[in-house]
Length: 228
Image 1 (cartoon, rainbow, N blue to C red):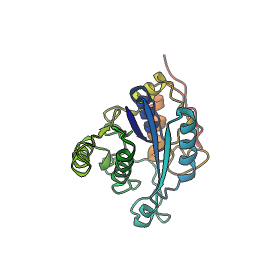
Image 2 (image 1 turned 135 degrees about the vertical axis):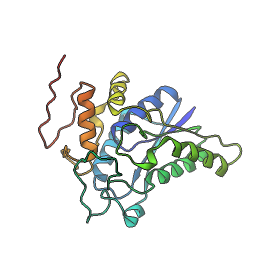
Image 3 (image 1 turned 180 degrees about the vertical axis):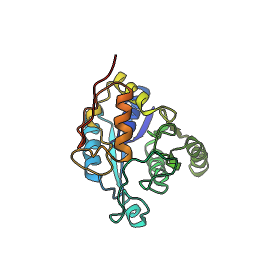
């Protein structure tokens, strides 16, 4: 079985890749550059993950038109990436409909190479509340894919961690020997993670909940001492 894994360079896509490695005979990696502020650092993580997992092929796609569209602090130089805020609203780091762009590109590639599965590290239960990370979105998208591809094409969207807390994903990654030190989550920085943005705070809290020390460094001091 051939599987395409959408690999951003973060923990969720890293662990999803480790799951796909167990389930597929051939792996293919796809990465998206869309003008994000940490594009260079995410690319570095992606390259290291390609070296680790050794997929049969890898594809990097440039969709920098998303930066031209804007609407996200990850893309717009005039918008500040907010510190973590404990609220139910969608943060300004949300890139409008980004995951739909990513999936449709993967579907085009899947039809060409005959891949039966597309793996995504989308998370609904324990994320920043992005609307394109909801399970219902992928259920509907899979139906659209079936309607919009050849009758002989059968592609399944696999979201194996969509209902996991990130701490559960981290523990699973440890069980699968996923190299967590290769991943990058910070929205702001390309060298040392800020420790204050939505993604950093969720990552730190999740490692602490999992009672594991995060292998990457932060600008802020983090207490990695755990009680028995």
